[in-house]
Image (tube, rainbow, N blue to C red; front, side):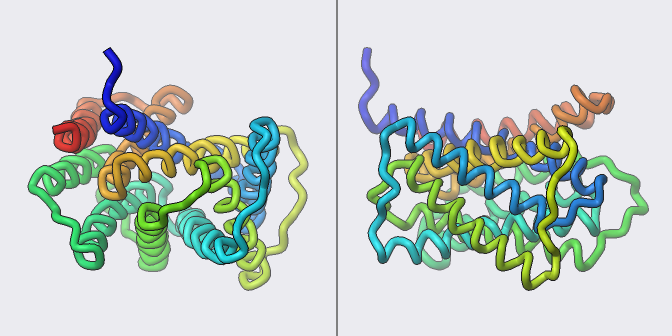
Length: 296
């Protein structure tokens, strides 16, 4: 039996939101080894966005898609790409001042920001289901972080990661509000292109020259950052926002830190504890709750 178009779109949207969160959660996998090699933030972001633009261009050529857009839309893409790129920039800079796990935990404040902004600006009604989903996800993410109790948060690092969260929230809402005539591949190509311009500007203003990567490991990290948390995450997030809305897409982002935990357990030998298990169950409960509420 064929599902109605609306139900099919929602299933597609939720699946895309889950994939977007999983892929975005791989950010530290490529960035931290590059930082360990003393590669600056501007260089890491330049290769991430530059390679992503190249990957999207190849994708579009394979589809036979043109790069043509309306002149007036170019400004929108530059602004949207700037929001997303600056969100990435502030997140990466925050890694220099605090543990990546702590930063990733705090970053998840963006669904709350999305819900508040959608209510305040666009008068979206927030249900108790949405509030409960956010609370479950926040508590679960808190359990995933199990650093030392005497760790002090860097004020500067906290400011950077909260700015990253706010800009990402604004980006999600802006994508939702723009009834774009372009398909998701072309849309995200131009988002990345706009983001690349922002990164070049950041490199100049921050006095961080872009340097050449030398080792195979460094290039592998750059390709990973371009493909997973940029090309695939951006593409699937665009699909999710268009099909199920800004707030549900943001809440599904709770799967990002779950991805980080799974990577730590499988690749870096971190112990899988009861605390982690409870945290993951709470996060999954929050995501499932918002999916079931929207389905109803």
